[in-house]
Length: 371
Image 1 (cartoon, rainbow, N blue to C red):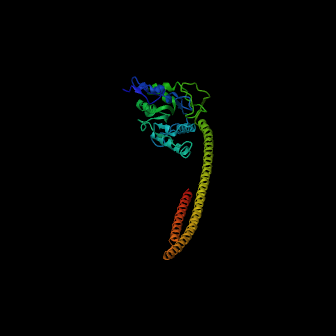
Image 2 (image 1 turned 90 degrees about the vertical axis):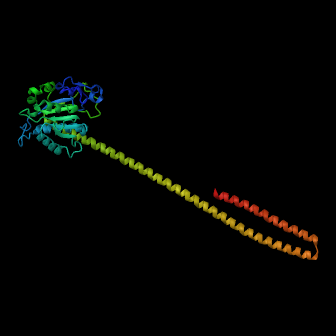
Image 3 (image 1 turned 30 degrees about the horizontal axis):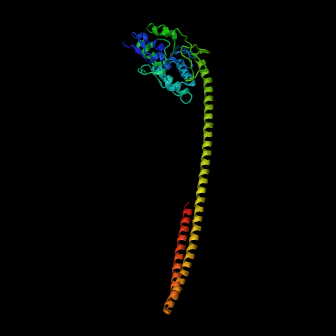
């Protein structure tokens, strides 16, 4: 093999299969990136082999020839997935992989029954076989080896390497440890698994994205899962707590939304009230303007009537004076004629002066009306 550097997995996980490659090293980011330095929340280890004994008196079964299944492992794997979901690890970051199609079908049946319709769990990113998952990866891999009588085709080291190299941050392998650890071909990997307990070790109280424990920090308050029944009971208790938390969050969110709706409704009512007040002020202003306009028009009309009366009086007076002038001229009374002419001119000038004054007053009234 010519692979020299890997940047997919934690160096500790990569060590499980790096023996298969000559001089396989790790890219610098695997030693410095925070995601590689942080722990797997809720788990004491970054990788572990979990031994699964017979479940209800059975290990591997074959409902039909070569269709290998292991109900104990399927329940253990699915409950481990359920535990991961309860502590907040996103479903899309978890894949379940197995070495046989029969086990894949069984895993899907168990997930459908226990997880599909429960919003706490849902489906993981993938449930598939090692061969189908080649070339893919995920943060967390749950691997079921199925066999309890014979090692089976995982004895092919190439398939083992594919199975162990899919995980980036956490790898949890479920199987019959004694069977696989005694296989010579698998010894380089299983000698490392042997250095850790084969009981699943959990760390209560840790949550995804809130735990600040580093991978190298000492683990406190960890406890050992004895078997699948023990894990199932713990997950049930944890799921009930999670549902209560989610319900409380939903209630708080509903209260927040209702409060926001009430505030928005109050603001809307205030805005409507302000709008009605402005509309009322505008209508009052228009009514007042119309009233002033009517008053001005009435005043103008009275002025026009008065003006016409004055004009009629002036015309009548001028006609009388002109007639007097006519009579005087006929009688040859020159001095009296000149006096009468001056009187006519005076009447005309007074009329023009009154018209100019009235025009100025009208201009002022129009200016006030426009204001």
